Length: 234
Ligand code: HEC
Image: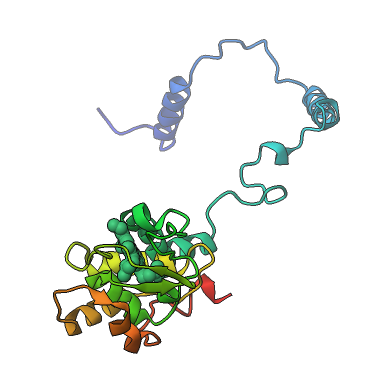
């Protein structure tokens, strides 16, 4: 083929092929909707929408808004709630409550004990006194006469030792629980404190109340985790 006669003819070819690519107009007689009609439709929609609220018994967006802060507050867990769950004291109390099942059979669920048989833990000077005496009691048991809240007890066989069957952590949790349940309010006992007494205390027999007198007011030293963040500080 020879070169095009006119320099524009290539542009014309390209233009025509572009036009030929276009789809056929299937309805050449239809017209776009008049702007006035579209405007009128919008107006009707806006007025109708504004009537929705008053005419549906006071429906507002807030009624079905799951994130509404207006009523009942945000249902999602708060920072405070998360902190509570992670708080070492709250955790120890929860585990200790479950562990107390071991003690509850004798000392009762309400910590009141049974007259003449099992001494009470609620309000007991042995529970609320020095943590060292309390740890020693559960570790190796107690036998012989004991006076708790003015009542004398001397149950044959006394109380067994729990040091061999319960870990330092289990004992710490149960003791934290009994020191902070019913009317009791006391410091937390950690597994490190129990372990410390366990290491120092070498004996194979149950304690007697008089033997423990020197530890009556003695607290096992040790840090209480998260003490600064504990909600109990209130
Ligand atoms: C089988 C019954 C029994 C079980 C189980 C038992 N205890 Fe005791 N507990 C006794 C008896 C009986 C005494 C009194 C011993 C005595 O007469 O010297 C006592 C005394 C005590 C005392 C000192 C007195 C007082 O009331 O404060 C404490 C503290 C104590 N128990 C805590 C516990 C804890 C904590 C547990 C669970 C880990 C537990 N006991 C499980 C029977 C039991």
